[in-house]
Image 1: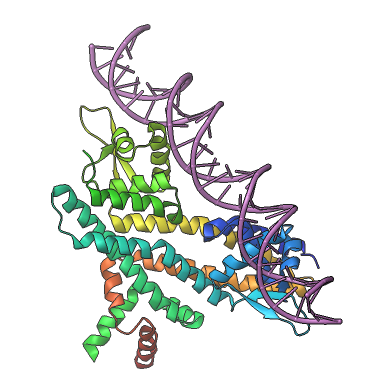
Image 2: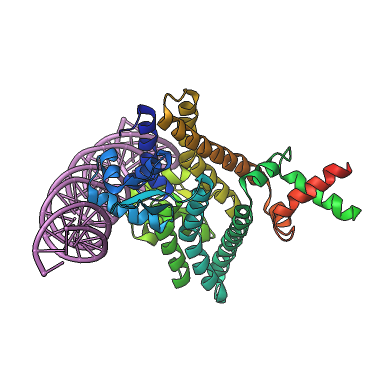
Length: 181
Length: 181
DNA sequence: ATTAACTTTCAATAAATTCAGAAACTAATG
DNA sequence: CATTAGTTTCTGAATTTATTGAAAGTTAAT
């Protein structure tokens, strides 16, 4: 079974975006392919569909599993492993987001925390620490926020978004309520 | 003037994170360096501080300017260009975020919009389109949300965050209000 | 108009990443 | 336990990306 032109274009696009999203081209393609393919696929089918080596597929599978983006399925009486996306689009996006947070934010937070523990011993260090403090705050805020948001279902999120002229209003809203109650 | 050990560690860390944040090692280092250095620096000072070539610094500057992360300053009676961060940490983070949205989300949105215009001509395409539709929704939501959030000052954001046990509550809040008013 | 101070560009090279394909491994089957 | 169907690991080649340093470009002062 080979891909329609449009579906193929999508898969190739996923490849091009792959590295921006945190993995590499092949892995991006594999991910896109599995998402738009109704039935789980074997490693060989993936290799054929994308014209890449079997070994490469194996590596890619390992990587996608480490991101928790795909899962293995077995078909009774068949020894092959079948791969499918792990969860719906929303789930997958959350996982990517989570993983990227781990890679892009957490290491820096750790370093900054350490660094901020020590006293600054001169003017340059004082200024540097001030700036690092700012970054630290920012990253903590982003982290907290994203975990709040991830708790919401897409529906809740949509609701929230439709609040009107911006989330800023919500703050006023909240103030109003606290006055009333 | 050379960096203290701690500041140097920070700059090197920025380098290591550089590629994760969307640029490369050198550019990450340059960005970190300029952020923690109180006074604007010349290209040569940057090259010295990081032990990289003058040409490389020039490239890096161009790139950082394209991200709108640094700006040039002139000192009267001095022909050299002095570089400094453009804005505070919050501003810079917003710019990085904005730029990454442009690179990581917008191209996909464009492709998906195109792809979703056509009728699916068979079962496989139908399923694929359903999935692409999901991705499209997700990305639109993320895009809208992030622009809402970026309008807020850090203070507003903090206020919002302190709403208590999660932003989810705000939705209930909103429902309550609509009943009342 | 020439020089000096500085910046940018670009071709050559170095370094890192990706990938195919072969070899090694694992587990089910007879 | 030997065979076979399947998966994983590894190596070096190819590709891509980053970096240098020299040459070209720019600008301001003399």
